[in-house]
Length: 258
Picture 1 (cartoon, rainbow, N blue to C red):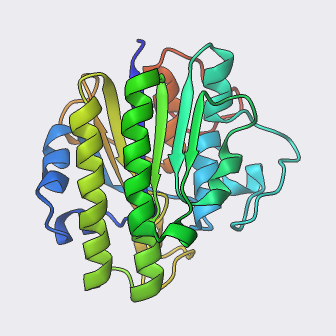
Picture 2: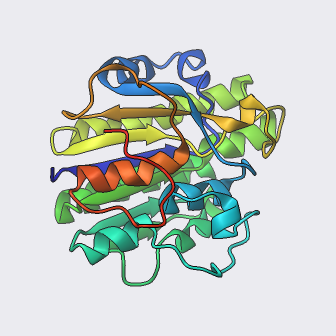
Picture 3: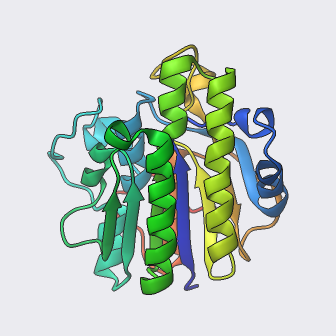
């Protein structure tokens, strides 16, 4: 199996926001893909620890990132990009929260684009991420591309999860996701997910509102409908390496969903 994979992550996007935001493409994704609305994040359900667990397929007590401040791993685990790069695959990142720069090690990326959400504002930064991803993926066709949108998390913290402004941010983010899907769904398996949920104006707890995330896998290897069995954010990396025909790292704790 040698697919190309486009991983799209909307920060702080709760599973119930897919229906609550009312975007037609959110419903279409659920009809097109194999999906779970009960995929579990890791604790603490905080952005950088959750991303590290997604990309390294181990829990925070193993990779050692417990806050949004990166610290080098005491016992390093190969991340998704390092594993793909070692197998001769190309990777690209497009993101607007700068702390994610540490998800990959130097020399493992073919292309990287960052637009500061705190400087541009996340609405504009989301658009810049999409524009650059569209251009760069068309030009270089990486085997794996990661696109991160921070607007939904920013809206949750500013206004509260599941409120009017948050759901508007979800709708605007799904606009960007749909644009990428239209451009690349013929060449790429498209995975849409999040890192954590949220409640009130925060997240990080073991509450289900914080710990449950959506996971939608769209491509020829996935049968539309509910994903069978339990799933975790740590299953994303093993699934991607399986799709690309690459071995998982020996230390990874997640499993392929194929």
